Each structure stands twice: as C-alpha cells, then as structure tokens.
Length: 478
Image 1 (cartoon, rainbow, N blue to C red):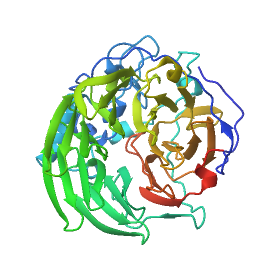
Image 2 (image 1 turned 30 degrees about the vertical axis):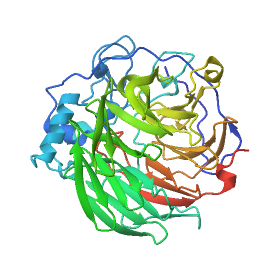
Image 3 (image 1 turned 120 degrees about the horizontal axis):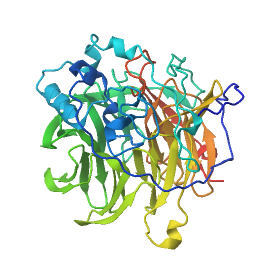
Image 4 (image 1 turned 90 degrees about the horizontal axis):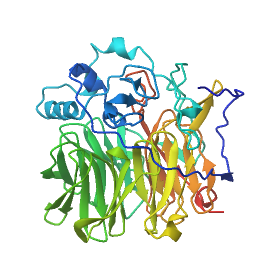
C-alpha cells in the first residue's frame, strides 16, 4: 500500500525544535540464519559489498534469505510477492574474503563485466508504510528511482571544508584521536587506513591491509588498530610507520574499539565472536562466543554493548567476561546498523536500516526502562512517497551527551535525547553518510559522505570526508 502526499521541495536548511515522535514497539520474531545460494556468480559476490549485512534483514518467515530491504523478496512469504535479489550467503562471503587474501580475486572496483545485466535494474523504493509500529503491514513502492544521482558538493561556509587526498573507495569508518581534534583516522574499502592532519587539511600517512578495511581505532595518540576482510588485526605505530599483525579472526573483522577504563582493545567479527586484546604486549586476552555475527559494538565504561544479526543486543562486563550481564532484543523491528554508548555510561543509542533510532538504558529496573523510546528519522518525501533510509552512523558529543546521526538520505541530524528534540539538520551531503565522529572536545565533526552500495553498482558522487566546526547552538540541549 502506498500513501500519497503533496509533493514539494525539501528544505536543506537548519531545522530546530523538532519534537521526536516517541514510539516504542515490540520486536518481531527473529528470522533464522543465512543460507547458501549456490547459483550466485563470483562476479556478483564481488559487487555485493555492503549487502553482507543487508542480507540478514528480516521480514516474514524464519529464513533470513527471504528478504532484502533493497532488492525485495526472494521466496514467497506471508507479506510480499516474489521479487528476486542476489544477496550472497554467509558461506560465500567467507569464500570471497579468502579469495581476496589469496590474491585469487581482483578488488571490487576492478570487476566490470558479467553483472551489468542485473545492475541495470533499479531496486524498488520503500514506501512510508515500510515500518510502522502501529501497523505491521509492509509495502513497497513500484516507483523506481535512482536517489544517488550526482549532487554538487557545496560548502556551507567557513565552518566546513572537504579533506584533500580522500580514500579511493568507500569509507568504512572515521575516528578522531583521543587527545586532540587535529588527527583523524580513516579506514576504507581501498584496503588502506589513513591518518589526516585535519588542521592542515593534509594526509600524514597511510598503511595497507590485504583486503578492504571495515573499522579502525586509536589505542593512544601514536598507535592505530584496524581490521577487515583479510581477517587480520593490525596495530600501526604512527611515529615509526611500522605495523604489526596482532592476531586474526576466523572471518572478517567488523568492529574495532578501545576501552580506556580496562585498557583493552575489543574486536567483533562475522565469525560470531568478540575478542579482547592486551595492547601492551600485544596479544589475545580472550575469545567470547556471540549468538550471531557481530555487526556493531560500543564501550560504556567497563561495559561492552554488542549488536549482532538477529536483532540481538548483549551487555558484557569487560572486567568479568565469564557470563553475559544482559541479553536483549532490539526494540526496533529490523536489522541493527549501529550502537553507540552515552558518554555518561547510562545507556546507548541503537539505529536500524529502516529509518528509526532507539534510546535505551542499561539499568534493568522497571522504573528506568520506562524512559526508553524510539523515533523515526532519515525519511524523505519524494514524488509524494516517503522514502525510508538506513541510519548508518551515530556519534555522541562528549560534553553535552547529545548525538549526531547520519543516514543514506545524505543528511546529518543532531538530537537532544533528554528533551526528545532535533536540535538541527545540516545541508544535504553528496551521497550516503557512512560514518560520523565528534572530536574529543566536541568542537569538530567528521562526516564521511560515501555511497554504501544501497542500489548496487551505479554511478554515484565521489567519496569524501567533510570537517565541520560545530557550535553550542547546534549541539547543546535546549
């Protein structure tokens, strides 16, 4: 079912005092585990980069291969008619990573032939009924539209600029140095990790992995850690420009974080495990099995919050990893995209692929749990149809405990979680927002504008990193 509305121009200017719609619903039933689709070609697997996570989207039935939010449904289920999609299975993703490491595959952007016939087809747009807590019906628009046509890169003034010498492929993560807003670490699908001098708008150095890098983090101002599809965890000395392979996972490494309170590096992987690493040695300090593939994780003091496939959320005590403190199910109905902990360590914010964000609290008491809520965001009306976009990135302001979200609609919003208001919205960026990072003092926001293959291998704007100086008017609760 479509809901039409009056079409009109979209204002790209700052929006203030926007009250969040507080809607919290119960999660739908989990779907099952990924299954293999042996008919998919290897060239097609190479193109399906970020679909490694999209393919776990759940709608009807118990088989996670039933539905992809960007391609439609593969098998008949109770809610939709048949629409083919080519997302690969867990086993084939691992084969792809192994072939990259062994040099048997070219990198994704070198593969041009064999899949054009599929990618000339556009994915169905998503209607405004795509997700409604009061109405569980799911509908898709038949209108096909390329939402990633080239947009001119515009500067908003002296408070924002684009970094020079950006990555040559999609950006996976941006992280500021823990001690200063001058240095920014950037990981990319071009298999590199780069260090930028933000103040001087220059790249200081870069080092390489054998395959695309999915995440990176600072241990201290002079040491970077990173991991990705080559399954290797590396640490790089930024003073000597030397790197060390610390260890490996059995599948691609999706998340890399540092916990200062316990002095431990944490990695999460598609091999369904979290590993702790002693950064002083460096060596592995423990491996802990998770129920599903790890998509995202965040540290709140000495507690670790892990988001996995199947919409599961686990809370661990990093000082005692012998048991799981809390097992939760996401309050959002669809696949988890990002989790970030409040700087005050009282809770976390969780985003999903269907344009919603949930504010959750760690205290399990009934009184505190009453305060949790969820709201819609990153949705645009185009030709009278509300398009729903994934919320890919979350970053907290360390001083004010407000947070920024970035979505595949190309917008960045700043939210006040306590008063349930949107504080502001920046101008529209050239393409999807893949990652966000506030500096340690909250004065600077790094914005990775990078197409995330939501509609396959189509023409898209260049990947870029924007550095924006933010003010209290944009980030302070009102």
